[in-house]
Image (cartoon, rainbow, N blue to C red; front, side):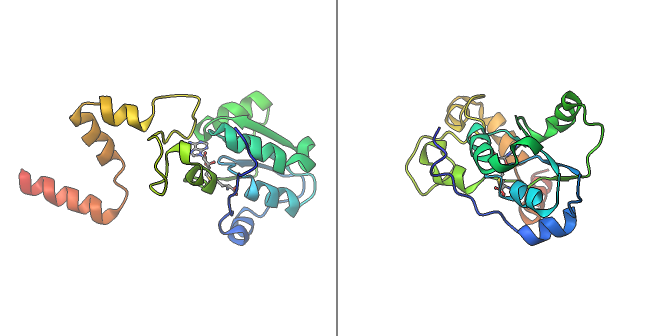
Length: 175
Ligand SMILES: C[S@@+](CC[C@H](N)C(=O)[O-])C[C@H]1O[C@@H](n2cnc3c(N)ncnc32)[C@H](O)[C@@H]1O
């Protein structure tokens, strides 16, 4: 997959550095590398930092490798999900880290690449996999799952308190 068109503006760069406070020689883990904008900032902010970067999207890793090339000796990049962070650290023989960043969500690259199927802006196949090498697509799910499974999935995605409260009120009124 080409990384030529990979673009993503890292959010809240000053806040990330303020709270992470990277120290010289420190070990930091970026669990959601994306375009590696935050990782690069961390590496630039102090000498001899070791950075372990994870992303579940191979396109992000490709881009990160390119962006972090000047720091190649200080960086280990892994195709992994952030819940696998402890395993990755164990494999690397790193017993403790000084800080960890999780910038949750989709990247602009994922939204802007039509065939990834994340955006309503383009007419494209309903894929929506963060890791296009594994698992079924969203099209597979909506076309093959039982209605009860879809209800379970949609309810598990309810994040807004207002919507969650409405669901609770609705279920109370039904009971
Ligand atoms: C908002 S972007 C990160 C942007 C990055 N901070 C930067 O400065 O370029 C979020 C990234 O998290 C990745 N991601 C989403 N869920 C993940 C998971 N469970 N484990 C690892 N990476 C994940 C996505 O593939 C995407 O590349």
